Image 1: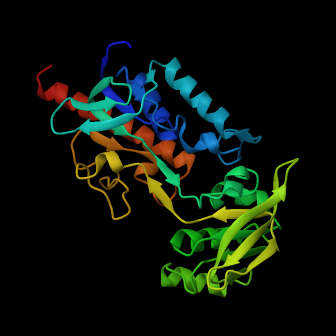
Image 2: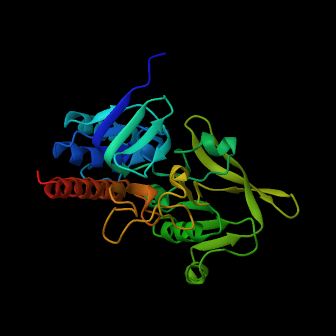
Image 3: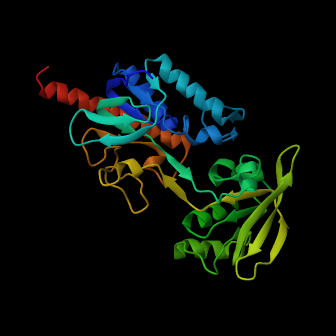
Length: 321
C-alpha cells in the first residue's frame, strides 16, 4: 500500500455536488488552487436524478449525472485538484484546519468549504429503490412537472409531506397523501391550506407496502397500502409516488464542532455562508433545508468561494504582505 499523503490548499472543499463544484470553479479562477474531495456520493444527489428540466441554460431536458460530469470537468479545467476520498474526521481547533480521509491521506486548508449535502430519507422498500427516477421521487419541485394532469401519492405527515402535496396541486389532477398516523405533525397553517385544497385527499393510518409498476419500460402504475392498525392491504392506481419523510444533512462529522439547528443542518450567518468558526463556510443542502435545488446550491457555492477569497486576502493584508 502506498504511504499516506498530505494535501494542502488555501481552499479545501468537502463534497462534489453543485455547491462543491461551483465553489471550486470560483476559487480556481481566483488562483487559489482549490482541492475538492469527492466524498461518499460523488456529484451529490443530482447523480441519482434522471431528467433535469429546471437548471437554467438548457432548453432541452438534460440528465443529472451528465450535468454533474460537466460541472466537475469545468472545475478541473480551471485548475481544481479533485481527489477521490471520503473524510472521516476533522480538527477545526487550529489553522490550517485538518481532515483525515478514509484512504489514510490527510488534508489541510487555510479555509474550508463544506458542501457535504443532504440525503432524502427513503422507506427502504426494494420496490421503492427499483422505481426511483421512474415514478418514485423524493422531490416534488424537481419532478412535479412530469405529472401534469395525473394522479400522484405523497407519503408522509410532516411539513415536507404537506408542502410537497400543496406544490403538486400546481401540476397533478389529484394528490393523495398517505400517512401512517391519524393526524399530521405539520404546522397548523400548512394543514389548513391542505385541507382546503379540493385536489388533495388523505388516507390515514396507512403505510406504503409496495410500489407497483411495469417492467419494460420501468413505470409506476400503483401502490399497495397497508393499514397499520388492521394489517389489511389495498391497491390504488397512481402515476407517481413522492416520498416526503424528510432529509438528513450529512453533518455527523461536525457535531459538537459547528453550530447546527435541531435537524442537524449547519447554521450560517445571515446573508453569508460563514459558520461559527472563522474560515469555515457551508454551502448547498448541508445548510439549506428550504429550497434544496441544484441552482441554489450552486449559488451558495459561489458565495462561499467569494467569502473565502476575501478572508484570505484580508489575512494577507493584515500580515503586511
